[in-house]
Image 1 (tube, one colour):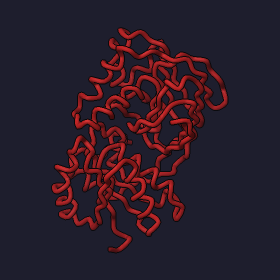
Image 2 (image 1 turned 90 degrees about the horizontal axis):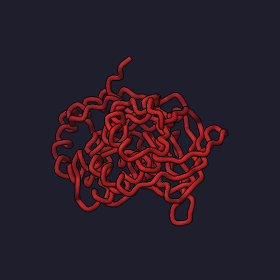
Image 3 (image 1 turned 60 degrees about the horizontal axis):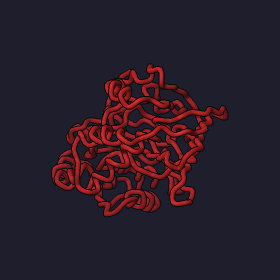
Length: 312
């Protein structure tokens, strides 16, 4: 196959197995639209990263990601792992089959397969920022790239529980919502030292989101000021807050007005460092990672993605 054609990295387990059920239909639509591609199927965690890295090394530079935000995250890490070409020379299209599909919302990528494939065919691209976070797990330091949002504290705990349930075969749009309520019962805010572009703050963190794009948690807008290519993180810090106060403000998490709450602080920054209890967990793009201490840096305009029609 010509290396000018596409490869499709397909995560059959995404969306609670929805990809496996729907892949024959997706393949048919790709064929109907005349998109020539070679499919590669993932069979374990981080396999999408390995496939992306190896195929770019072989000369491919056009990738269709079939899965959820986590699959895209793995592919992004594969793009950065290879050194053959600059990361912006790789073109990434998305067919969303996950449960959240939050990253795709920012770029108006249609949720229906026909619309997503037509969007890929048009190849209208946007070069967005990427994030790089250094974190700890099992006593070691690790790095992870991401292109949507990193969450710490309560949000990361909810993601951890949700992912655990997904691994056991549970799925559905209300899974994340259910885990918000379940996790809230025992969760406690944690003390941390936060350094934002070199300026230090002592805070008790309930939840902290570091955003390149706007949406996470199945449609939440916790970082409404995020702009995908401005070279800055949009940071929303929810300080120690009562459980009833959280429940009373759930709607504000989904409409973006949570940033106006008296217990919330917002920042824009290029770097962020957090020191504190190892009980402060971290997730990126819905993938559970490890815990603090963490250090974030931004990589401006480093990933080329295919977008839908963007409003002016």
